[in-house]
Length: 233
Image (cartoon, rainbow, N blue to C red; front, side):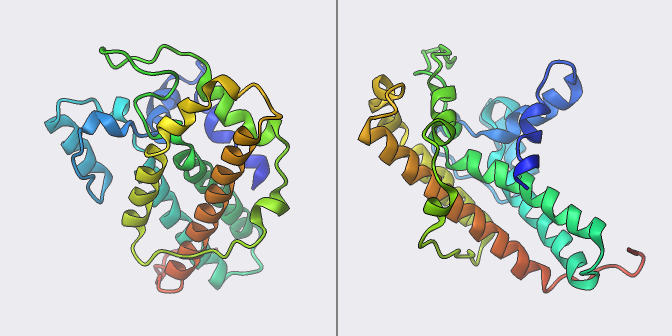
């Protein structure tokens, strides 16, 4: 799973123009662009909302829908694993799908993936100044060498009863931390800063718990899936 989590960022290289165009918006949602409008349950309803608001959906971003859809893809893979538990191709499908879900889930927990101010405070034109803060925040878990075992210690995965409301609640929670991120902007290069480490650890633990909860929810959904007769493995 860890081996495959970076695959979705590799999709955005210039040599893959169609894939780059389609996948770019899957990693974020600039919540401010919708001016408080409630987000609908499904992707195409969201696209209609953006159009009605005069916004380009690819610029607003679609990460909540990526998270919900990949959770259900994982549920489908798990349902096949329940039927064919020894099938190594099905096992690989579960791992690859979980890796993609984990990538998008953890994007959603990074506050700068939930805001118009994703790489420096946006100007009146809504454009980012490309200050470099986004990359610095993304890199903190690696640069601080956060220990996965420590991050997971004491976490108990909780599967939400209703998938999209839980995803949107996490999105809003991330967006609420944008000012806190910018308050740390001058310290992000200081890996000895207690405030920087505390922020990185808190976000990483939230991301770990959120991701695990989605995995658990996918497993629960899979128990009720009736696979079609034509699906053979």
